[in-house]
Length: 201
Image (cartoon, rainbow, N blue to C red):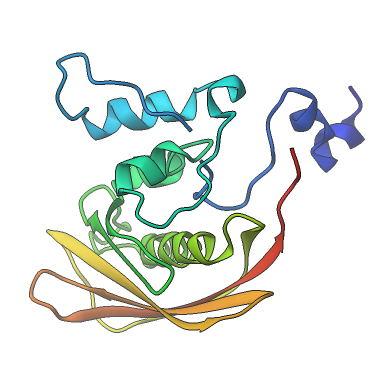
């Protein structure tokens, strides 16, 4: 395999993988050994290693899917970055997406919530909403994101709420507001995704 093939993604496709810029990509969840709800780390690990053969049947529609079923249908679950950062979806639809993220483990050298962590949360929320809107004929690809940081956080959990401001045929845009446990606004972000034709087969 040539370097060019690796760089263009031909190498990934040859191994049955597709290149993706976004966390939302669909896989099958593993059952919990104890019959209960699996822990997050176990769920994400099983999703990220599920072979393509187990993902052969994608749902006809995302409407009415539970969060667990939605994440289980993505090739890499919520994605490894979201797993590392502890992002947890609470509500999903094309119009509104809600998730939480812990401050601990996502701080910068001064002990404050890293601004980049807030942007990751914002992009995840906008991408999930866009994926819902685009499915099944198109996929969402982020093309622009910005963020304004209003105040800091040093502990606890932050909540991000993405609200659709444009749901079109070729693009989507969301405003994302991230707040702390007191309801104080920490960050305001806007993300725009392009909707591109989904690969056939």
